[in-house]
Amino acid sequence: MSEQRYPVGIQTFSKIIEEGLAYIFISIILITNSAVAENVIRNGVPWFDTDGNIVNAHGACIVEDGGKFWLFGEYKSDESNAFPGFGCYSSPDLVNWKFERVVLPVQPDGILGPDRVGERVKVMRCPYTGEYVMFMHADDMKYKDPNIGIAVCDRIDGDYQLLGTIEYNGEPIKRWDMGTFQDEDGTGYLLIHHGPIYRLSKDYRSIEAQVADIKGMGESPAMFKKDGIYYLLTSHTTSWERNDNYYYTAPLPEGPWEKQGLFCPEGSLTYNSQCTFVFPLKKDGDVIPMYMGDRWSFPHQASAATYVWLPMKAEGTKLSIPEYWEAWDIDSVSVSEQKGVSSTHSWSSNTPGDKLTVPFKGKRISVVGKSDARSGYAWIRIKDKEGSLLHNSLVDFYSKVEDEGPRFVSKTYPKDEYILEVEVAGENPVWFNKRGDRFGSTDFFVNVAETITE
Ligand code: GLA
Image (tube, rainbow, N blue to C red; front, side, top):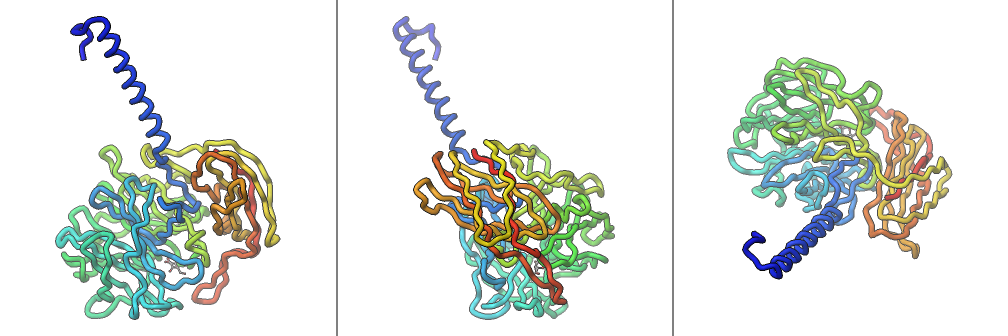
């Protein structure tokens, strides 16, 4: 609108309208900005989905499809290691996850029937048929009947139909940890622990050929390609315990595969995680390989196992995650500084039922503490000022290698007065491997060094 074309009174009126509109516009921007959920990935703390429930997607993978991101994972329970189904979440931004549904529930019988194990679900869309093809490790509760299962669906978040086990040379593959990889030309690969890489048929429903057998490879294989180089990540065999994961590179999926070493600092136990998948994160015309790992918490995996997702640096055959970021911004791919008002506590106890109570004013609270080999679970509760329970979940303070950092970040509540309670649960993560060796914590300690209120 040009001012010259109007008499003075109208000019003033139009200016008022323009300024008014500008004001409304600015207000909308401010309101929208404050309403927009932050795009920060927080490692090693439970995440909340858009319904406020803990995100339960372990041994996961991400598929980018139809303008959204889809997260598939083991929909674990807190009570037992039996297969509880595979879950599917969707997100516009890789941070805010909406629970869609359990896309493959416990089957009436068969490899994923009652009291079986189902792990490491991986989904790919077959470019040739348009079908979504799901692979998984299916086993008995003692891990003595391993199989690789296959399921299909014509919708990404529909009911997957379990077809059975996938075979090679007419025989089922009697192996456990697995992964998948989709090459740029659409070729699908199935990766199997301790060596084999299989090329899938054009429709992904069967195996065409074994293309490699990687000497010295371990468990939890995850593959990606960058600038013409194939990278394969793998872990040592330590059950739910974390170890220093390592990687191989090759010019082709067929190899030759060359063992390169660790991609995280030695002794960090892969920043206290086990690899499961590498997601190609598209950023400004570049693709950043995003490491996805599990920080397991047996036996309370649904509540207390968490995720470690970090950008990787791949240059030639050199692959690394140079730094551990407790929190990072997915848009700028940079570390996110913790905001808020800090209070120190220096509270530590291994007496079941001992409680730290912290009243706070704000919308969110973070609990920072030490995790180590003598620590166990805490009950973490949030109550409103009348004492009504808003949140209660088990949080794991165990780690084989000592670490100080955030253990819990609450949901965001309306700004008000609340009470945080941290209680020693008197339970700890302990498990045994196939040989009967004991792993996990030796005591029940819970340690709170700091709380941060926003
Ligand atoms: C390893 C595997 C997991 C699971 C556990 C069970 O960590 O990678 O998928 O099978 O062992 O102990």
